[in-house]
Image 1 (tube, rainbow, N blue to C red):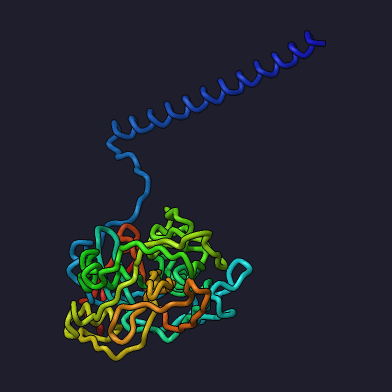
Image 2 (cartoon, one colour):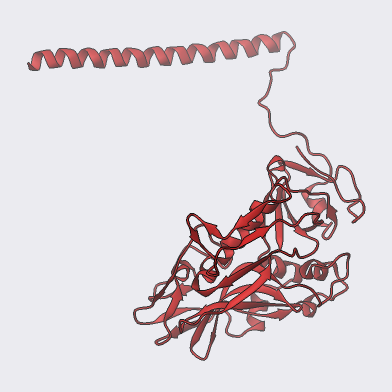
Length: 356
């Protein structure tokens, strides 16, 4: 009956309120006990304990490290020496070129590439031998994520709180002093919109790029070097394939002479003198170049002393294949690790690194 239901439900509600009240009272009593204990400690001359945080700063600060570009750090990944990374991820091959296994290079030395605030970035001294082959639309779709995931898997150090990634075009631009204005002076078409009524095929990631508008609406998610999930395949724009040109190329020595440490870091040379004779490597950054009403979907690279790009797919539904090395970069948080408590930063006496 309604009377019985009301009585049962009312009793249940009352019991629930009673439980809540007891919980509140218990929490209040616990807080009061804690407060009284702290007061007693203070009156007794004791200093109340504080929550544990990272250890004290030892060694060099971020500002000091900012002036140490090119100096060496005694960094070692905590991944096994025989660690590998497969291009088959989440049940599908992602490079467009069949399953590839990338192996960690052991014995790499690491140099400071940049320091901003508490963030310090190291780059491998030389270019590792391990290569990644990219092809067809999926080479463009997933090149950035494959490069970054591979470097993180092979070169991170969990005990130091470090993460790995591949070098990106912005890293090299920073070393060379290349800005947005410079890109425009290098390539007058940079940043300009194109619109193709024919040759309208595109890799599916392009629809999410801020500079891509395959169906006349620009994406809002991805910049040149961004990618957090896998993409697959290609599509054809309904009417127009639109976007903004993001391709440019330049010669490294035009901006930093081969005798500079910046040039050495960009070209992967030992010591302070870079050359134009070195292995090529990928940069984990995408771009689009338009030639003769065809859009070429490309991944940036360093090749023969130049920053340029290699296409894996184009809007005419043609494919290309390219294979270059990875260039691992390590991100360090100075709130988690100390750098330079010992060492001089020279190749033979690198700065130490230890968990805080």
